[in-house]
Length: 303
Image (cartoon, rainbow, N blue to C red):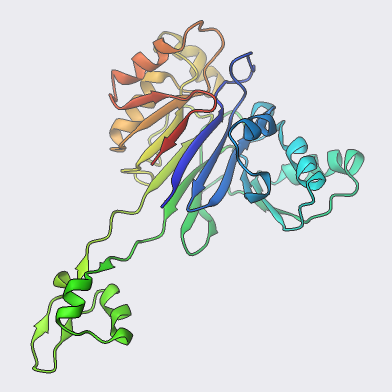
């Protein structure tokens, strides 16, 4: 089953010739979630071969341009492509007003419904759920209201051990109960434990997105043992004062966060253009958390 992250943009406030500003697309079992939408996002979606009309949910962490300036263009393109299904946007409550004014002037004939969902900037909340995945938003520590997002697979049921099922001649209408954890009693009264009848399920996967934020351990328990974490790493530790003043993190702090929440893998991004090479940020993060990788535009990570 697919659980894949594509980086569309990895730069901070200023795009460069090689890096666009923040945007990612997460594919969870063919459900496509767009996370932030910096300038140039639709160009990167084309390059990443993502079908636009498969995106039904867009999550905007905060109201800074490098995280949402691409949104009007994406909305317009969806309309030009003939979209009919509703588009759900999860963001700060002010986005509806800001975007509504823009679209009211430039795009008066959007041919689909836009459904706005306001994020809670005070506490975590479940903002999306279907039969395969749920999404939880949680407040980050930035200069303006900002939220991170946790994408969690639903609990996965074990598979039936068909050899055992056939051996004990378990009726078809009872097999659902076996997958749900029930034992089986044979006609002779023998109790067959559930552990003999199923193949254990793999652990449900989790991806945590921590956009612009000063270092904070407040929600470590929420994202604990995530399979993959994206944590901004705008500055080096030597520029920690600047990070603190602007509401950002250092690469070392990103690594520390990943280590403390026992993540399996860390991706860092949102690099300041003050650094000519970003390998220094990667090296610094690895001093705290070895399994760290660099977000690069159009790079892909299977979870």
